[in-house]
Image (tube, rainbow, N blue to C red; front, side, top):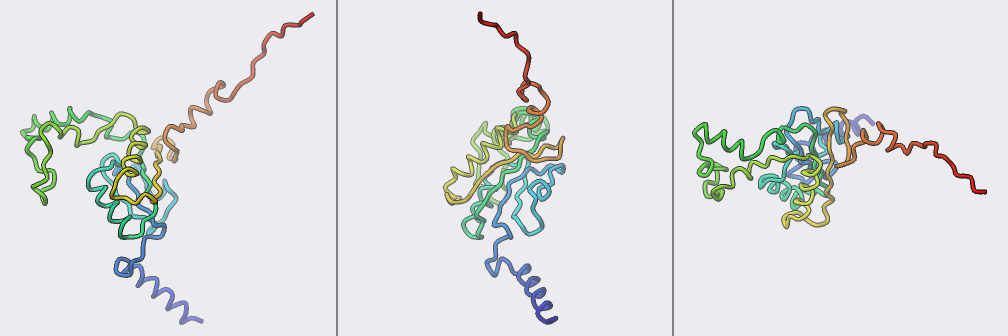
Length: 205
């Protein structure tokens, strides 16, 4: 019946608009922590669509206080059952150290030991000398991905039953992989392919 089709579409539209009021989680009960880099197409990388996940992006795709805040709200109050950490190759957070960036800011007249890290909460202060660490640069994207997974798994604010995993998006190949599983290292050498070689056989008499 036509009216049934119309009512179904209207209900879908209503439920989409009133998801929070109705307590409806996103389609996959999924929260994604990803880097803000424009070359990281989160939905494409994970094979998900609009409405499938809550996506939190920051510089580096790193666990910060605000990432924990968002993950806590989603897992404790909005039905999220899974977290995916999505980092990527050639990340800008690997291009300079925190000390270097802090020095650049100081050279520009910014007192990094006195600056407010959250203007809405001026009572939140960083101890002196911690700003460089707070920036959270890193040197190995595979290592940092695994560390973010562990930070989330160890957070008391995220339920233990939430499934948490991490992946790497290769900007150079436009493909997804697990940390430290670089297929290019397996398909381009004879050694990795277990190439057979001729060996002199000693004949026993």
